[in-house]
Image (cartoon, rainbow, N blue to C red; front, side, top):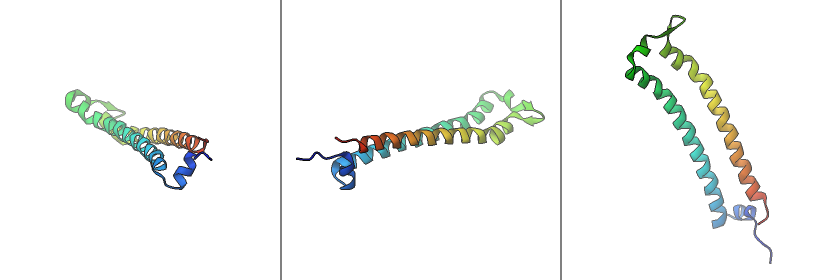
Length: 105
């Protein structure tokens, strides 16, 4: 009797294959929500900081209000760094999934 592999379960769309796929999708969703949460928290931290400590609204950097520098300039490198981290982590998830699926059971 031949043993079934996870790859066979995926191709034949069995219940076990669905479980493998749902696990991957859950992990990808968790990663996406984590990135979204980190980015939203970082963006919301600036107005909260200005509200809680009003003196930070008067701070300038080279004649430009610090809040503008944070929201208008530093947001973009942070987004790029977060996107790079997300892409790396998503690649790791897919590699782990393909390792599990490609392995003989």
